[in-house]
Length: 374
Image (cartoon, rainbow, N blue to C red; front, side):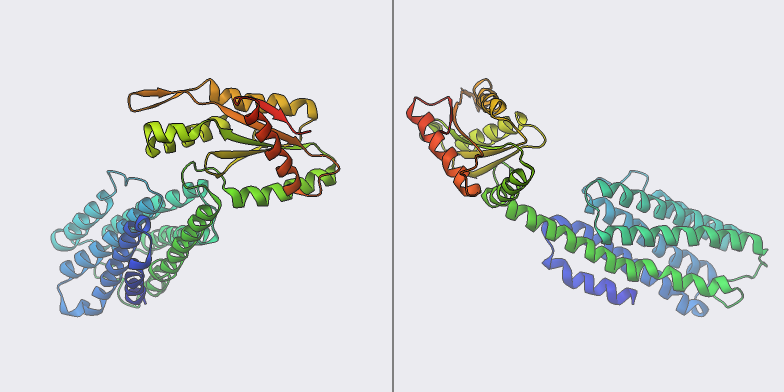
């Protein structure tokens, strides 16, 4: 099952976004390494004990290390510098206490300690991943790692208390723990791989949702998101009898910037204006880019006397902060049209049309000013 899961993940690798491929490659490597390490026990009678236990445990530890690297890559973090140490020290310890000073109990302690460090680190990575997403698949994988971590700790205590004989082997039925270990140990490379694939799918879904709802240039909500939010907020404001207003903002003489400095500088100007507008709104408000050089702000829970001051803050936030494109310092102004929700507004689009009319009035009056809709 481990080999099958690793192979399936390999076939899927090419269909994943480039950003997820390093994590997928590391996870696949981990699954195949653990599978090969477990398979070594099938040929135990054919190999000297030191060779078999060193190679098998080395492969499994490298697999657990690869799982850690996969999680670091998934969350776009650099692996810890010490990450290879548990595997290196574990392999050296197993070789020493199997070939030089044979001692099964010490081997089990060393290997269990290395497992606990690597799986504990994976648990921490997944817990910190909650800051970026709270997907069920992440919680599933966290539960699997935590479960195997606890089982490894109990397994260590069991073997230490068992009082093992010199010829004790974990590859026989001498203890019930010998049978439980491979069954529960397979949860990580088998069920865990399924959870990891679901994590990748969830990440892709969120990326597509973000791409569909966000302006690619300014990283602000786009027209589609603005319309959905505007309709919902318009209805909510009417139901709660709270103030609601819209500001439509247009960059003055934007075509001149494109013609004089080039479209690349024009893109920088759009990003600059978007950032300045976002810095001048409250947490409850929403600013979106609706296309070209036009932006729209939704003001929630505002009174008529507050709206004009809020719109002036937007205009000043852009006017007072020029930006640099190469060696050129460019000043930008915006015109703002504002409409306050009134009883005669049948829907969100009606309110938006009145804000557009106010913007046209601000442009006609000389630009770089705020006009309120009649």
